[in-house]
Image 1 (cartoon, rainbow, N blue to C red):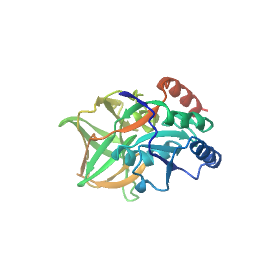
Image 2 (image 1 turned 135 degrees about the vertical axis):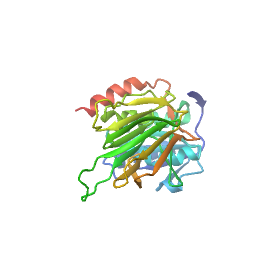
Image 3 (image 1 turned 90 degrees about the horizontal axis):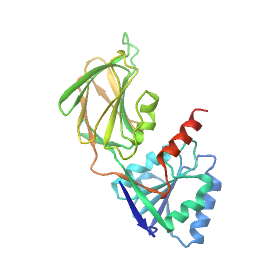
Image 4 (image 1 turned 90 degrees about the vertical axis):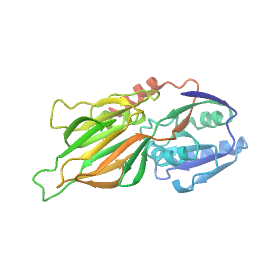
Length: 277
């Protein structure tokens, strides 16, 4: 799970969310510190251009990290998050800790590997660091807009879940939408995913934690309704009745740089307390 790197700074990339209010002063400080330490860097303006670096410093909130994480993971680029947004569950440093972030780049760091979901549907593959959400589509012509979703794990039927849909989450995403829907919190090192119903119309439907070596199938049971698929909050396609999606652990992960004293539970307590205010 963890690996220690010494003097990790080689080729550094920076991906920023320029729309955050905190962006300008944090970015200015980051650039100045990198130049002072004679660390060369490349700024990427879009996710598609990310490449050719060893470490990607992501300046923004969780949404910004989610935009860049899959591209970085597929290219074997490690990620270091600096929070210029609001909550920042995935960031290692707050905006005022830019100096500490640069020191980590030039010194000793730990690597934390985060698993990724692969979703195969209609002959296409999509990836999610947080979660894949199958949510009911809205039809004004329908008498109601609930959906019946059949879920199987390793070919064995788990249940037919009637409601607003289902969330399949990684440990990383267990503190996101799944948590709001009543799912459990998983520590990042757990080799598991979690299936969480969304507003199920039955009291027996409960979140299920299952091995990340398993394959999960989601099938829309009814023909007259639709199911929208979101990966890390982004709408990717719509499934029609009878269509199904296969979910499994991707063959790559996202590696985050961490401080040696980084504590998941300290961050969890702080962020959840901040979130509840």
